[in-house]
Image 1 (cartoon, one colour):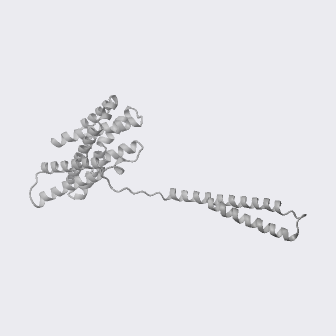
Image 2 (cartoon, rainbow, N blue to C red; image 1 turned 30 degrees about the vertical axis):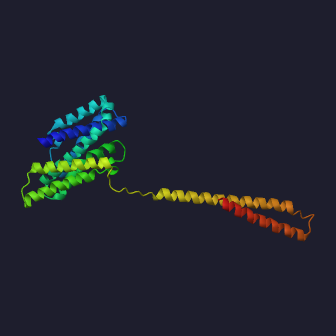
Image 3 (cartoon, rainbow, N blue to C red; image 1 turned 120 degrees about the vertical axis):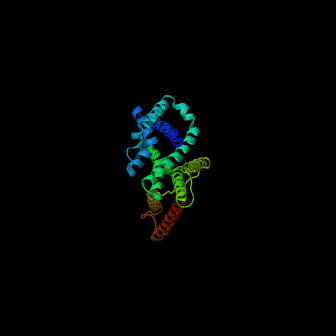
Amino acid sequence: MFLTILYIIGITAEGVTGALAAGKRNMDLFGVMFIACATAIGGGSVRDMLFGHYPLTWVKHPEYLLIVCVAALITTRRPHFFGRLERTFLVLDALGLAVFSVIGAKIGMDYHPSGMIALIGAVVTGVFGGILRDIFSARIPLVFQKELYASIALLTGMMFVGLDFVDKHYFAIDQNLNIIICLIVGFITRLLAIRYHLGLPVFTYKPNENKKEDNANANANEANINQAEVTSETLTNQIQDSLVPKSSLSLIHRRHALRAAHQAERLIKIRMRKKL
């Protein structure tokens, strides 16, 4: 009963965040309700389909779907009010993440005794709703960019599996106590990640852009050098024309004038290259 109440609080909060995301993309009411439902119950639906856990949770309990749709419609009537409660919804989202992760791990353990399946159930249930929301909103999922999120779902699932293992092989641990411990750990860890902006290392790789920039710079330099050479040759020709009138100067004077012109050409090239 306690876990069910927390689950309803979690899907309501997720429904509101989904509706606000849809509003930022100027969607109609159907789009708002669809994004809200995908955010709130999408992760659980994907988990149930992966595990063959039928009927789906919202099919077995259609009232969950109704709660999310009502929350989404109310959000469309008072968007600024819910927008001002951003911190409150961050807290509720952290609670929802912990609840979804525990439920996913529990269903995974019921489906298969392997702890790996339970961890997959925890992560899929905890984060896939947000991934669907961002994909349908045409943006990169926030779970791949910001503070620890999927890692907390994984941690919560590991806690649940570990305490379940201790219960079966060493000493008895009540399942409700196991659930409460995992909820507290997941909830507090998520709040700490938000408060101190804790996240995984980011990988950045942009080879094509750097290559394009290098090629553009090389082409620009080559064009400037060619322009400098053309300019220097033009100036040299002008100097030769002005200094070497063949009809009036002797052969010796012509040689001196050509030598001076070539020296002037080299100086012009050196100065142009220094400017580049």
